[in-house]
Image (tube, rainbow, N blue to C red; front, side, top):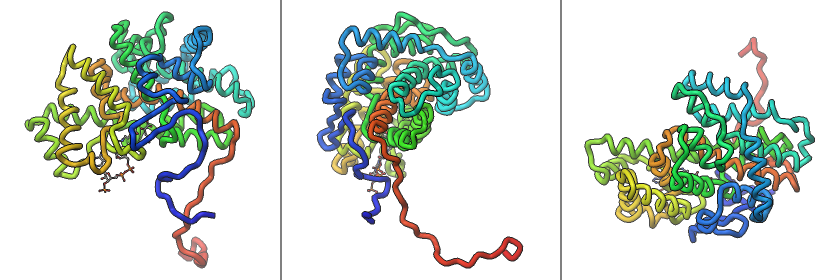
Length: 382
Ligand SMILES: CC(=O)SCCNC(=O)CCNC(=O)[C@H](O)C(C)(C)COP(=O)(O)OP(=O)(O)OC[C@H]1O[C@@H](n2cnc3c(N)ncnc32)[C@H](O)[C@@H]1OP(=O)(O)O
Ligand SMILES: O=C([O-])CC(=O)C(=O)O
């Protein structure tokens, strides 16, 4: 047994995976051998999920069959819709509503009683979850606005359909493509905290619904997926402040505030996904409001160059630019992390099933630091 304590499991190798690889010092991310830049430029979210799950990019027939299956599985049950309505009325947080929705999907799962070792059945369940998340999330948002949810649009892909169900309007090509790219960029990222959570759950041979709802829970935290929402809150705070944006960041860092969207456990240079999202944010700014883009670039420049965070290996991560992109697409701020989950469902399902192919229960240990040899005192004598 190794007695080295690795807090936060930093750098500890716990599994082999063919899904994605990160080079943290070069700022490079690949999914099954393809660079994230090529996938973002050339593929759709559906193609990327197929790639993650099946190990190769689909040909036209495979993609058509996969997309058709996803489209057929988009509807959620009346019980899920009613619950989304009740949670919206109770002002529940969208990530909590999503966590509930994923658990509830299982009640209408046609293969609910399949043997957990039947990985083909688990993959179909994973596909149903991935197809239904956008519908449940959009319904929750519609209920919050006092509107009825919309049926999925049969002609639209997953990204465009989500924007349609959210707003009631078919998105422009630019908005649909930008959002599709954002989903591709968020689909997988090695053994991040939420993926590892899903894998721990999957390693007990619990079903994929449990694994994905665990992933949603882990993603919600501000150190992980929750940061994209926090970035936008900071940008709004800057906008409402009397200080100009550069002075605001200067003051915030002097007060010791940690700026969300900066820093990463694996990257010590700028996250390649942030670079792509920054380009999208710039394009949206050129055709609309540019202040959010300007705030982010000023903050990045100030923190990395003037404040010297770049030299310490602290650079923008994916969450830094996704917030402003989603804001420019007109998406409500507290939906940003649920959108991350909507995309990452592809990665969670892929990793759990890959791990279960050669499963071993994940069970590390802690060094005991409590007392020894204490004498037990009965309750009435304490
Ligand atoms: C999709 C994702 O999950 S990407 C990450 C999203 N999360 C965020 O953006 C939240 C802000 N960032 C952070 O809190 C961290 O950078 C994390 C949690 C992402 C990574 O943290 P860790 O690898 O545990 O690094 P840790 O928190 O130990 O920080 C290391 C050093 O960098 C500094 N640092 C890390 N992030 C930041 C930041 N956002 N702003 C300023 N300094 C930072 C720390 O103060 C620490 O400095 P020190 O060694 O002088 O004390
Ligand atoms: O890899 C991580 O630790 C966090 C991250 O960027 C992601 O999950 O996309």
